[in-house]
Image 1 (cartoon, rainbow, N blue to C red):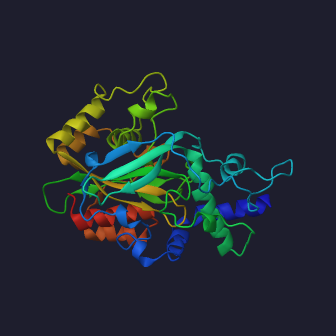
Image 2 (cartoon, rainbow, N blue to C red; image 1 turned 180 degrees about the vertical axis):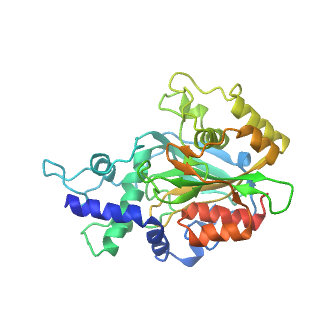
Image 3 (cartoon, rainbow, N blue to C red; image 1 turned 45 degrees about the horizontal axis):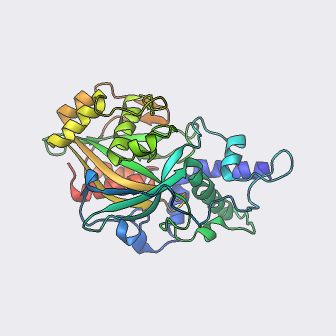
Length: 360
């Protein structure tokens, strides 16, 4: 049973892109975002880009949850050495196939979203990283197992139902950002892409993704970070620094809250946003049809001179993979990534929407 489970896991890791495209066919065509496999509820895709900082965040830390957790009895999980089944998919991964980065850190769990209202709003509560492993990643494993002809008496995917319903499963929210170096000359702007190393990450290994992309979560476990870091902009700032400059993700917040007002990178980036030399937009929210990973789709366009100052030490490798050389922000380049490379569904949707809205 363990070897069979590991064999399915390998198939999932090695062919995520193909499985994701095939899984999208199980859902109505009108749920797909910009012709990509990404799925969305009707209130998740606004007609026009929204300034990122205009989205109202509401936090309900004690919000109850009555949906599927992935901790229910599941006969597709492998056996432990004592003969009993692993209690969760995350437990099985931790013992049998753990990537370099695999921690059950606290997150902000999506409760509801309306990005089409006159006042766009996201409501969130408390969650943990393994919530999405035990439901979404486990559902992806189940999908691959079924496609390989391995049936079980339980079905996590069927129990979850509509993946865009955050009441059906604990829904971690990632913020995926297309970072554009904006040039004044037409056709000269570039964007950044990240390749996620399957040996280092528990989610979306082997795929390309826009960069930065990270779970919306406090910077560290200490209680003071929960409210202090409850900001889309602050989360994006930390992810930019971590994935493009190679800095730590907590910035010492296990000892004291991050002082965003004195952190030079954060103050320079915020000053650029205020001055208009950096522009941050949300273009929607979507869920991956295979893994049920749920991403806020954002775009950050930074004028070239500011970009070159902020990212003078731009890294090519980080704890989750490698950053490609800048790609031209052109229709041909975007088409190549969206249709011919193993790009995450969220990244494909962001690229399509950013080009559609000409966010340069």
